[in-house]
Amino acid sequence: MTDSTLTTQTPRASILDAAKLDEDELAFIFERAAQYFALLSEPARLRIIQAVCSDERSVQEVVAMTSLPQPNVSRHLSLLYRAGALSRRREGTFVFYKIADPMITDLCRSVCVRLAGG
Image (cartoon, rainbow, N blue to C red; front, side):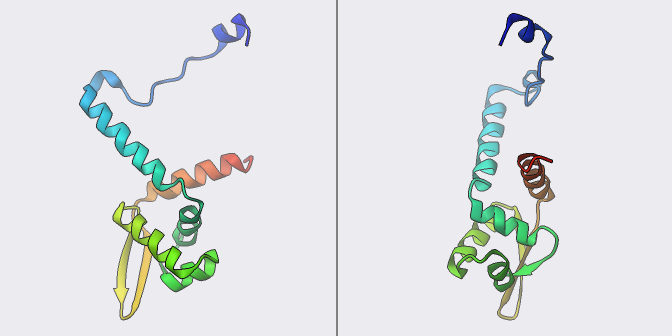
């Protein structure tokens, strides 16, 4: 990178307006953000989010759509539910999951489209 390249680039805005938040608030927000991104760091969870992003699905449907083992799907669904990313309801012996936090699908879609070159 040359000196002229450095001077012509537009500075990027910070993630948060730190002037409005104290250090404890910033630390808390960054910790929560890290937890959120960690939730999305497992490819199996991304496949599960893809399976339920447009419609409510039973555990069995998620297993069929992802080709993941049922115990693995159940474990990840439970983790996503506890984190607040998914909601669930029981109907007889079936449990159905759907997206509870639309930001998760927006974020996943944005990143995946970007990586796919779109």
